[in-house]
Amino acid sequence: MAAVLACGEGAVLSHGSAAVLWKLLKPLDGPIHVSVPATSGRSARRGIHLHRTQALAESSPSSSYLQQGGRRGRLLITRRDNIPVTTVARTIEDLRRIEFPPRLVRRAIRQAELSGLRLDGVESDGTRSDLEAAFLDLWRRHRIPPPEVNVKLGRWEVDFFWPAQRLVVEADTWTYHRGSVAFEDDHARDLDLRAAGYTVLRFTDRQLEEEPIRIARDVARALGLSQLDC
Image 1 (cartoon, rainbow, N blue to C red):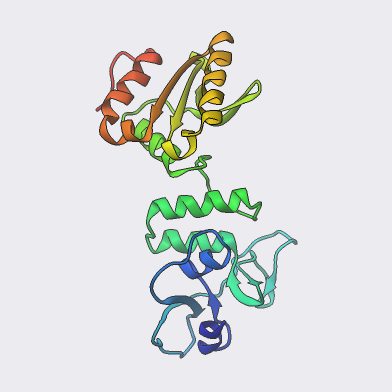
Image 2: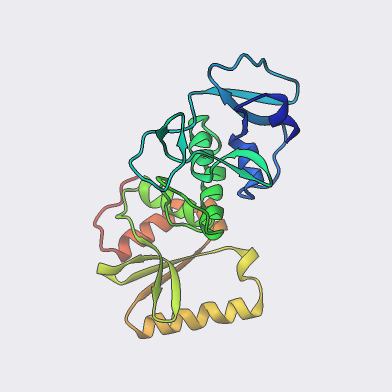
């Protein structure tokens, strides 16, 4: 709040600082990010990263959005804990604009989805972890047909699914699969899916890091692809 007040009228918390306020990311080191109108005469202050921007409203026919500057506009400014801040959608848009680390942008989007926050116009890859996103990137790099992500098959939800080939791929990490209950659930899931006629492949984060080509070839073979694009 102090940083926003120090930057005068029209100032709002934005970018990484807004993501932290929305609890989309853990606290970040460095200055507080504040956006001000492009016409603002405010100069940069110590400990504050100042962003000058056009009016934070865009033309939209929807009546559910804030009217700002005498016209209807997409809601891009709101308050959280009484602090003026960019909306979740605008915050993510700003992070992309400044080339924020992609993994942190994906994390912010996933957290917003899990929290049920409004994400107008924000595209999501459907993943729920950095590991799942890394596997999706592996499919893209080797031109493997894109799977459906986090699909419900019977009583189980699977990470990646190619319906035409009835192929399921699960991405495992030690953090979430080290307990005996998780271990038993994984094997019960695999048995159920195989009994229902699905092929199940399971890979770990370490395999993804150390043997990505081998994983890609294994998946390509299961999909019946004649050649892997390396």
